[in-house]
Length: 188
Image (cartoon, rainbow, N blue to C red):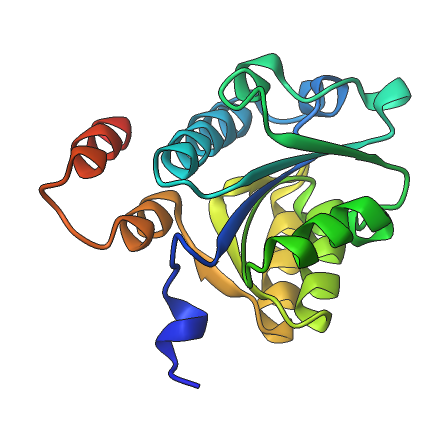
């Protein structure tokens, strides 16, 4: 298999998974880091929709942590959303069934918290045979040390580190299109 199949995102093969960016959980985060996460997750969502990349939201224990932040959810109101009690999204059978039935093999992962739900989801998705790209500037933990440790573990497990801009420009592939004009305005 060519190395580009793992390391370069393809809009026909990718799914964006926004993991547990929920009201009460976000209230516990550093507000500057949260602002970056919201901005970058928003760019990822809008870019995914522009390029026909499916978006999936997950929510951990909504009764305790609240729903996904409205500012993100309103960007993709028709996106699938799966509630879960397990930290890994893969603990929700409907979530994994949705991914399998999509036929897509690349996951773009962002969300909270990096060292809990994101890390466990990424490792299980890798184990299921997906190529997983973790968007480093669109994941968050209450502690920078926890985030860093989780990033290291996910990379050791085989995840591909990326950034918001790298991901969207990989999905775009070329400049000069209407999609390029829309998306390039988002990252300025």
